[in-house]
Picture 1 (tube, each protein chain N blue to C red):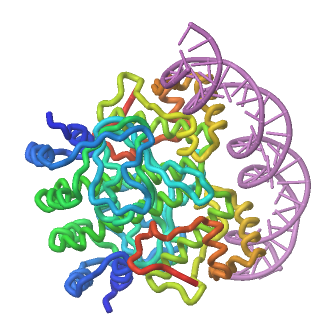
Picture 2: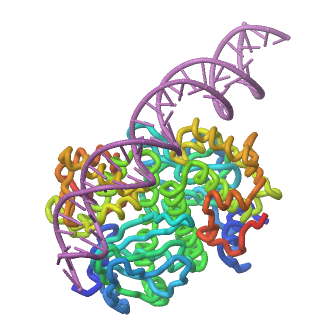
Picture 3: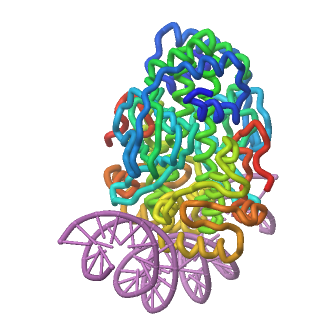
Length: 243
Length: 243
DNA sequence: CGAATACTTGAGTGGGGTCAACGCAAGTGG
DNA sequence: CCACTTGCGTTGACCCCACTCAAGTATTCG
């Protein structure tokens, strides 16, 4: 088991990997880095020369508007490469930062290009990964445009739980999700006060438990219904969660 | 000038093309098709074997929620390949349809794969194109989460105008944009009634003119400000519009 | 034991929603 | 050529989800 095991697990969740490909992947050169909470990995406007492969913790991508608002665009878990796009888009249109202390493997663009040249199958997988990233954005747009705050919140929780389950980061019906209400608010496009009340609704209705950075699903079916959640967009190889 | 000229123009707006690459591109085999207004090119759940290269008209991608709402995810103009993602994501998570009568070139996945194998530079461009697609989704998320309805509408208009300008589809400060208020509403996540009032605001403030399917920008600076619009996310090679 | 940081709760407000009617042009067909 | 339909845009009345402001209450931590 290599140090890049989280990546292998992630790719295996969306594609079939041969032993040879696993071998090649585990030999990609990288540099470890530890990010503190709130610390940026890359910021809007920068022109990165590396990609970040997340090894632990929780990260988020966000953008600050000119009026000072913060919109969170995505949350990331171990195995993700949140800034894979920088491989072909020179300039970052948003920032990437850690929610809690997070380890990343920094991989040079040149090394990824070489990997892709040498092993086109892995290239397709990475392309696929970036297309799934886009599919997640689409799901967020649908949630923001069509659902009320409880639906949006439910959708986010369904998505995070499903993604974590796909790479083995859940235990039963629970997973770590150390997000504050302010962070949830900035992701959902509602105020923090309203997230608070919405969370209370979900707790009162016995759909979830959420405290101390840990999420427990109490009623998956009801949550899925509220969120109009269909995991198909995550394009997982093995049918996801059935709690 | 080949029949696939719109694609060449589009790729040239985001990357440098060699004569050889232009040559290769103009020889990709395809089948023409004409879509009527409202007609679907591909629908959610399908597993397409072709990609659609748009040659004329106006298209949109959308998703219907279980409660019957329609969220429009993107609008597309000639030169776009709105379902490029289907190359690496088997199952469509949303639908693609025509707003008005639209010509498309249907290109088989195998032929694209072969093109990419033979000319890796073009492969990178297509990957880049799909990453820009994702960047547009991010911009929509920011608009939906952080802007009020006039800001969102202004953002959409800025984006469409900038994209059309980049491929030579504007005349001065005008362009064709045959969208109904209902379509705008479903894209912005607000009601059609409210789009009507918001459009009136923008007209009254002399920012735009919008009638008969034609958009004219009267005050670009004000529109950009209202939308908090920064075209950087479109990753265009040549700096866009300065009206 | 202050001083953060996160979470709660209440009161008042407003953006945008819904419902419903009406205007107006462009077909279409008798 | 007029009656009818159909699609799109417009307007008004009323309402509610979610926002802001503001003042709490835990917890955690130097």
